[in-house]
Length: 302
Image (cartoon, rainbow, N blue to C red):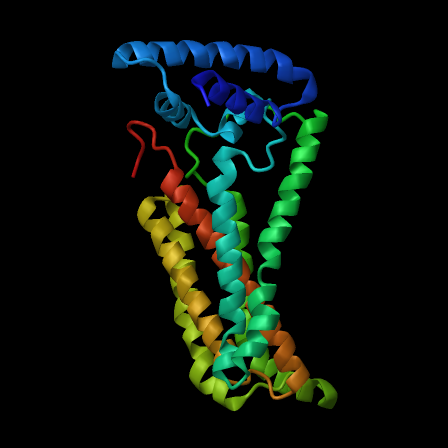
């Protein structure tokens, strides 16, 4: 096979990967380009063009699939390049969280194979769900109905709205007071409700008290932010650390034994705590991402 036949076979292999109406024009252009490249390479090597020389040139130029991709117009982008890292991070975090919340059952005696073919593999629904959301978003972008507009961002994103934070702190105190008083309130409820919401004594004496120092640390952190009127990197990291301590505590509550004496109430409470853990971790991951990518303006306060 002579060099021209090799180039012709290569061009035909590229053309069959292109839309029909574009093949002839691109094939003609590609033949001329490769012929010129081969002539230049033969001249630089001071040797006549042969099979070895043309094959080496074509390997450097790229496979037919790669060359065809250069000529094809870009298709619909499902996940933009700037969102790829966030997509992968959300996918991995979602899978790991589902495994972390369901693996304790294996340590409590449930068969590993049963877990793997239920929750283990089942956790892969999350990346699929995210991918379908990306497909829907890509379809919406293609319609051109919803074009994102640009708005100027706040120059100092760490500044807080004191009114909103004050309301949040007030509800924080009310919620903490209600949860702290719940064991005594449940004890004084009418007979059916008292049995439904009766706490396990071991939980109240060993696991429940640890929430108090975490509540105190969280409240002090938010109060300092309220006083200063803005977040600072140490306050951000402290808040994230307290959130992770809450996650560890709630997972301990779920895995270490019953919270309520009634089985149905206990399962419902643990399911709710698992959702709380999921939301806390997602919020912490988002804050870590924002902390890492936040642009600090020259002269900004630390």
